[in-house]
Image (cartoon, rainbow over all chains, first blue to last red; front, top):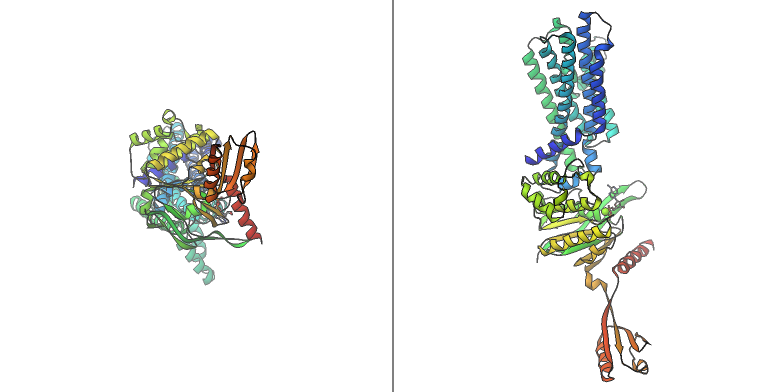
Length: 261
Length: 308
Ligand SMILES: Nc1ncnc2c1ncn2[C@@H]1O[C@H](COP(=O)(O)OP(=O)(O)O)[C@@H](O)[C@H]1O
Ligand SMILES: [Mg+2]
């Protein structure tokens, strides 16, 4: 256990010092703080559009950070040979992998926390209204689960593809997974769709993690479209995410165990 | 004494597009005794690092077997009592020396600041404990590498090219530390492609080339040339002609007689005859081969053999 904690905290230490990540984070923060200046809208519109825009910026920045952080997570350790001193100690490979993953999502969480703080501050300074801050703050929590899932996808791929390929694979999967509901509805529910295509759509729907579950900015923007039972929804989507993460990590460990480093 | 490392036909095959399957390590039979400094010598690309990685189950053998401290390779238990200093290692640069040691010690489930400080002292880095690794020189990094390799009080240390790219002073520092390790009863396995002072402290060596061991044995025996040089004074020049030893090179200059001869009974006879001629023996020196010569010769021979 201590080994996993040590590896995780070292990973956080490394991640928050990585220039690329800090630059992406800075760009995200910059856009968050200038977002209010970008609209020329009526006050009512401004609130909803602004919120959704800022959440969008936060989400996109987090996704880029998550991918850039995790596709290099294992390859860098191998390339710099830091992994050798670690694996020559009584550390099992699964402990190493879990430690790296936990460290990565902790670092990601820290960065998202910072962005969320800036987002809420910007919103407050503009609206002078605290009543909806709590509601808005829920979205980044959902995003955090989403990004943890994305990180697990990238870690899984990183055990057998190169960082560049992984970048596009994970990014692509995130893109498809984010539109999964829409895509699936289009194919599966249309009576004109060929049964074979329908079957493929169903398979994709099962295999690809549904990232769209976590895109909950819509209920905030349109309070009319509230989710029936928010607590149950949050629990379900979190459990769904954790389940997928576990499957991906187990897969990653099985591959990594056989791999030569 | 038990064997610290033993391998039987240990083999690693890599497939490459241009060369096909290549046995990078080829049926290696190694035998390292407990408590010795063992030199694993060979040119670049000979298969030294690959062998070490297999012994540490960082990579897996294609075939063959190996045991480290009596346990089959792959058994993680043994990792508690061995340690490894990789070739050209890299450490998390943002950490201070002390933080780095604390990190590695937590991998053993330990959290002993005092021990880490002691080890820093031991490798002469006590004054640099709070500097970050990025501020360390190469020699300092190598010393902290040795410190981390001592955290678990190991019985066996694998040092892969421990003096690669270091200046002569750093060489000496590392050599002295390694000698201390042996005095503490540890087994030290050193791989190297250059023959610096560090290799001279080895008790036994194996010379590996193209994945195969071409020489293995006590360093003193491998270097033993089988010849002696005898120097004597206070002899007439005419004595030179009385020396009738096969394969000997006799010379006389500035009142000194110098005989370069093979070892054997003739040596005693020569010494006796010098004495009875009332000559003074200045020195009798066994002529050792230079390690460099042995190394270059061995590698060249096997390369030629392979080319034929
Ligand atoms: N992963 C690998 N794939 C293919 N060839 C490799 C791999 N690792 C090492 N080699 C080759 O194996 C040979 C031995 O390498 P190595 O053990 O590092 O040599 P040494 O440590 O003696 O310098 C080299 O020719 C190297 O190119
Ligand atoms: Mg090497």
